[in-house]
Image (cartoon, rainbow, N blue to C red; front, side):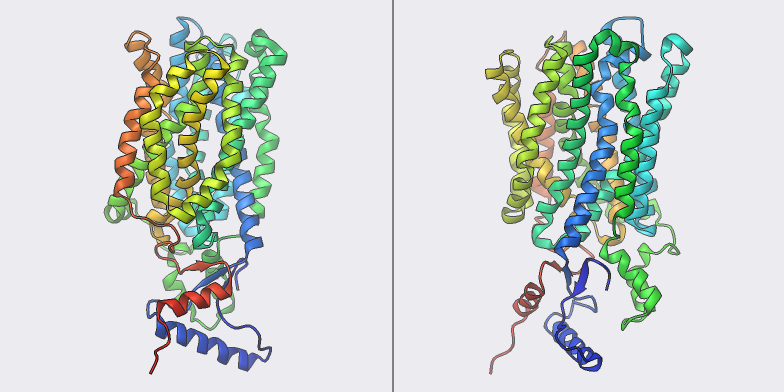
Length: 512
């Protein structure tokens, strides 16, 4: 059997012939009790393998988002280095416009890597995205300044940001699909929450390094050459992330195809290839038109959910340091410390949110997060504006606790929107379209709106409220998927006893 997955069948008889009779009897009983169950009736996961896969995916995700988060925390400095001249607002807008460029190519990356992951496997694509992200980030740290090469400096910055964005287009859809396909149905929220813990760890590491450099080097040295250090660190970290990705095992579905092609087990190769042809390297390429024509209702729902979630996410974790420093005139180290403290709190509780959405459902947790941003954004920003730590801490916690309800739930809710055959592709396209249109443009749009409305420093709160309202409507329209099998996949359970109990409960033995 593939690593991390076994069929729910008796294994006590060592005699091969007797074992085969018992196995066939079990399958026959299972199919009689539930005709919809086929040869792969129920997947019984190996918890050790699941934990290893989740750990590797989350750590790789942390490396990737460390690379991506560096830019947002150095936005003010990068604006002065690559876009000198004019006002501070113009430089900042130019820097955020370059930040947004990476998001404009993310849908292209999603359209490329998503269907590729459905054909050649999740592992290979996740390793490739890691290489591209590390290379793009490292190259940004090597670009000469505007003072040295003039207009070529911002041009090269945009090129390498586009490489970052293209690689990130295959990251979230692949990592969340990978974990969702490994986890048992009743613990998908818990295991999925570690993916976002990796995201927070990457952002926290990036913010912590920038804070350390700002404190030790000072603003003048940071402007001259210190800003390069976080980008140059991406090279070694990229190798670490690549090693973790290579060490990953493929998901049980993809491993099953490879095992069937090699060993030709009890199931015929023809039948198995028909079931898993979307994963084969020899399968026809999935047409984007097919995904849009067949999955468009779920794509719209995915875009609405992700758009609302990412506006709130990027407003709090990416834009807030700039808001505190540039708008409210906090000390730069002060602003970063506030955000780092917020993310540390979120990392401590995010796995608990995963357990809660496994128990009570995805929709209640998602709705709590959306309503939290809608109702608490204005009070939270009013508190943050006071300037004292006694006011800032509760204000940031209001926003942080609302965000963690979304962070700890989305990675389990989104993969369940799509069937297994097109999950990676559909999720990558829907997710990255939303991030491109709404998430990555958040700092740019908020900065432009504040400038257009005479410096109104409550604009971020109003923007988050509008996004949360759309998100709440989307949550109300989605189906509850907690403790249910992924569409197109057999039920996944943690133990064989749970598998037998599931089959029995679906169709109990008749009584005469």
